[in-house]
Length: 133
Image 1 (cartoon, rainbow, N blue to C red):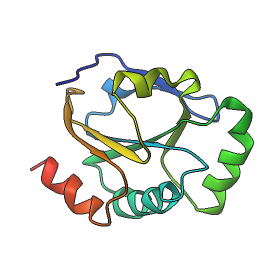
Image 2: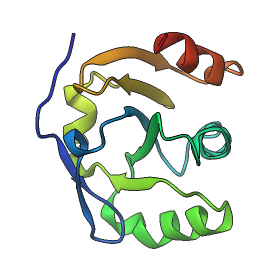
Image 3: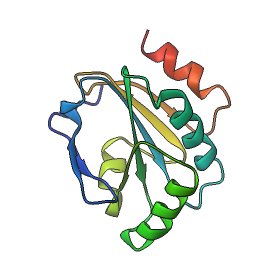
């Protein structure tokens, strides 16, 4: 099991978050603007977990900081209401062994990995719910 304490990120608007403060399951979605299924997957996560206090969605883009305006435009046009961060240099992705996109990593309240789901899955929401039972 991968385990991180005090793992923190800064979103595309400059706000910092410490994931240990969320006190919920955290869905890390690794994605990129060039990934065909990533937007679709993030749309599903946004719709399903927007008002769900049991989960916090954090989208981690593997694009570069040069793409921040493009990412902001996509997020606004799709009405995404979750934290979006850019993993410049793929430092976070390498800690989780991310090799393909999209990839979802589900963390429990102690930041332990409950499940890692690589690739697009039409039944992603069901896989997430099963992982936390």
